[in-house]
Image (cartoon, rainbow, N blue to C red; front, side, top):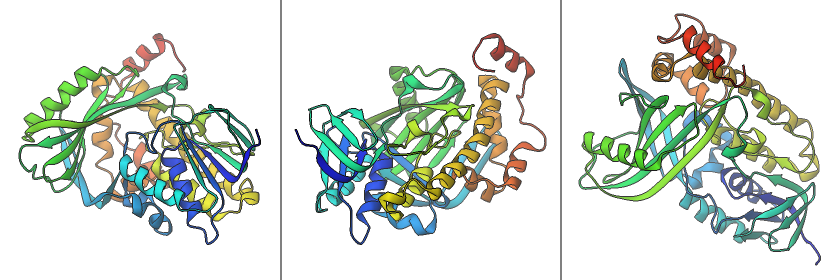
Length: 388
């Protein structure tokens, strides 16, 4: 069977390759794109949120069609601190991503969607599909993942279960609650995230920065409903559920290392924020670069410079993960974030954007350490084995 020929083969239909497809489609003369996804739709079952400063002004047009709602700020809550932070906060639901990207790719001459088809082999210029069909491409970008089973040896985990709830009456929330850590601290640093999607609908996620990837879905569903009722949200029904388990590494071995095609992107390639699990800020930067460069120039200096920028930032955030997971007892980790949210708002914004400067790093590390810093916790982790 002769291989079908394209300019770009994008393996994996998640956020990263969806953004790359949009960036390529925006060219004056769009290339031939093959977008391959093993599921029957793009984007999976996810909700992506981002802060205004996560995306450079020049790139905001790339993500704008995917945004379902935005708010002018958000709130965080801790036992010792409640604070509102400004700056637009926006949400991209996976159903909107699927609708927008699918329509854009289907409208392109010479492009093709391969939904419901996994890739059994991914090579420099060739992709073999499970069904036997082969695709040849000038550039192959592999953005499958993440795979929790292949988490690095030195890592904690961010894990969560979210329920999108229909409510009996309007919730009255004007802005999202990004972190509510006033809840009982269980299984590490625990907080609840509340996204007011519509007057009588909210996404409520129970999130943990934990030593273990184990996710007890039944327990977390019960805790989400308990939180909703205690907060006066009056849930009627859960209309959607999403879960996630993401590694929070404290070694930068997974940082991006671009070479030649195929380019490994997304989580598997290290293109993500180690301390938050966020992928959108880095995914937008990579997509913008791929869209701006001709195929023959992609693996040159610009990609190497972007990878090095991400790698330098990731190294610092991995150090923060090491401090969080190895120097603080699980029940005390919230103190780290309570201290962090007392920092100047521009530093907080650059933290989430994976764009810290030297002064920002000093503000995070210098000064009185958070309550709960414990040599005993460090020794307990050491005696339990694992990476030093």
